[in-house]
Image (cartoon, one colour):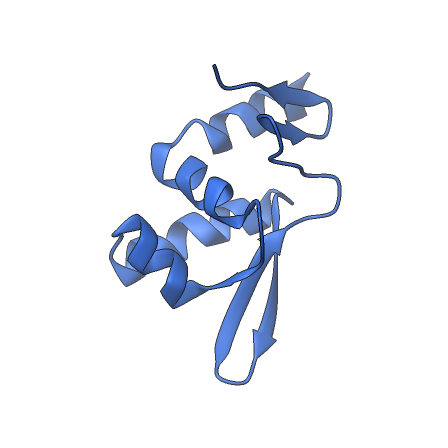
Length: 90
C-alpha cells in the first residue's frame, strides 16, 4: 500500500505527468523534454531525479547528453501503468 501511495504522489505532479506522457512513445534527451514541457533546466533535473529515484524512468548517458525512457514495467498506453497501479485518463 505504501508503494502505491508513493507512486501516486510521484505522478500526481503535472510536470512529471507531462514528462511521462512525452516518454510514452520513444526515449528522449533531457533538452528535448525540457523544450516540450517548457520547464527550466534545474526544475527539469529535479523532476527527472524524482521519477528515476522511484523507478519510473531510466537514464542512459549518450555522449554529453542523458536520454530518459520509461522503466521496465511502466506503460503509458491507455493511461499509466505502474507496479500495482493503473491510472486511466478519460
